[in-house]
Length: 307
Ligand code: CP
Ligand code: NVA
Image: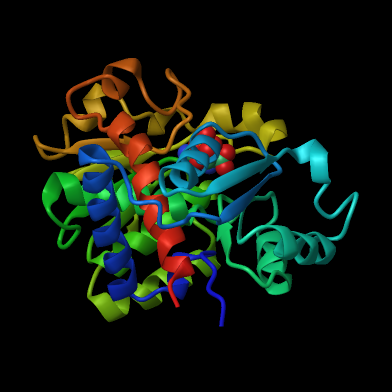
């Protein structure tokens, strides 16, 4: 049966750990001598319904480094679900390429793509989650601390797609996860339920703290993301009124452990969810984290092609 990479909850802790070990290996290999062309004659279709820098460039380069090809399909180009049904797009692409990566507005659209395609489908961000980002986040945390086990990861801000995948990877890989943000912007009950089921199995904790100062006490990792995600632009003003107490600034970072690292999936809105001082300061790992998208995604792609 073909495999997809749609949500972290679909994978066991061991499988995710294996993928991350492969990512570390592929990163070392690429830095020393370049990767072996193990994806020669393989092509990826990259469907984008929203803008992207990291996802687009890192997937494209991942395929090239491994000897394969990638095709960018812009929002206007294929009109997913508008010009043509998702079922038809999936079945047509299945005859041309070997793997699909898609960034969609509605999570259900990525599920439909996977359902109709005969080839693996990777979720490059939906309104529900961002699993590829979380794999790069885990890689960055593991590089820093050796493992995620027993760490305290605190996510400050909107309980959005990035928060969901971060919570799930923390639970899968043994870290405690705290969310702190406005009461009305908590992580969805369905994502929390899945997170808590995973956490119960791995013996980790998931919690919500309204007070960001309290949340970051003893944190090993502080993470934040935009207050207004793509597709929510009409709510920007309303959000800008309630999120400022949740800005990741030097005062907040000082309350965490002295060796805390600060992460952000980017793009950052400097002066809103994060200050320049923190984004460019000694605790920041923002750019190694962005670069790890390349390595984490190579591992995801290679694992999807394994028999
Ligand atoms: N973090 C991330 O997914 O960035 P892009 O939106 O630029 O792909
Ligand atoms: N939460 C953000 C992540 C962007 C990578 C968004 O969905 O716009």
